[in-house]
Amino acid sequence: MGFRQIKGAVSYHSGLAAEESVATVYARAGLEVVERRWRGSEGEIDLIARDGDGFVFIEVKKSRTHGEAAQQLSRRQISRIFDAATEYVGLAPLGLMTQMRFDVALVDAVGRVEVLENAMAA
Image (cartoon, rainbow, N blue to C red; front, side, top):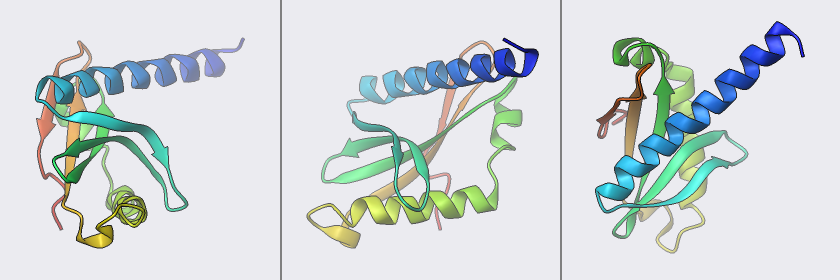
């Protein structure tokens, strides 16, 4: 296995661990994580949690610091997340009338999680 492959595998597993940590934070807050790495035709959403009759769409960003993690979220990515969330709630009983919230969960190098609720409000 070459250096690039090793680095890619480490990044992949580090991302999975970050998502698991974030899922635990939401579960402790009483929300049920109903989807992980949900992929629609418009893009992927890292985590989706149920909040009553609505959903919380969670983008997980991991970096050395929370600040660096936050800087990784681009406008293009936010647009894809909104489009994918619209596709997801289109399958829900209330369709586009479903309550939605868009959070960003930042994970630093030592695994500390900071959740920015409604961070991607339109």
